[in-house]
Image (cartoon, rainbow, N blue to C red; front, side, top):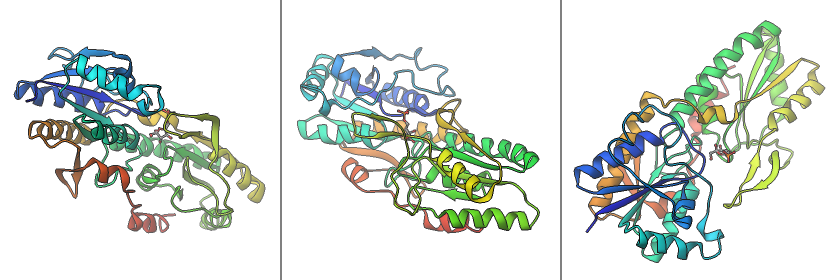
Length: 343
Ligand code: F6P
């Protein structure tokens, strides 16, 4: 019998989390359930930091970016007695189920915790859009809008100065954002982590464009992309988070130096960074987040724990968390092939 649901957002934020929280609250209220906001992701359940949600606290947040309950990259499995503390706090706050909004890491924790008898349901959220069985992770469409807008803007200045503009886009292992944003924003070269790149090919595109009178080139590169020469991903610092991820950043500068060396043309680098995760959610993200938030509560209501609410092949449905976390979302090969035509 469900009385109280805890909701948390974990990992990197994105603009549509609040839309999901609002839908979770409203759908849960329809069933007569209380909703508790767990502060700053899994940290809130380790430290016992919660906030009660009510109609007032979820009012007006649909179009607000970020997350009203905060987020962090806390992994209870990496904290001494972390799992025990989570269990204790779930008992203390009388939470009958947990809804987790996040990527593989955040939802991976609830997947593991189900083995300890904790009842949970996941909602996919990451600008990387790399969660298996989910057409969209909420937040990714808003980030795509940012990337597209920035590439549009960079076209005018790159063209005025006849420059090679290298635009670094988020995406640790997944090039979805760079690929989709690159296509939408008319990038001439798109480099993603899934396919090692070749400097000769990049220079070839630059030179071919110049032969056609296009003296500028826009290169969209995912932060996790690497050259075919088998080099490591470029890191911004040695910092490693509690899920073992190193902080990436700087591949744009590496590419710029190499291209300048090979061609002598002026290059500039723009790292879009956390701008991609900021601001207001797109209309599409608001709708998907609302639908997935409501679906997650339905799953709780029906007792379908250990599931993730997803949009798969356009339909709102669910998949086992285990499956969504373990499997890798394949790169869209057709989209990648298409991208190579567009310069
Ligand atoms: O996981 C989403 C993401 O935006 C990645 O694309 C990026 O590598 C990472 O988060 C950055 O994380 P942080 O906000 O901790 O710098």
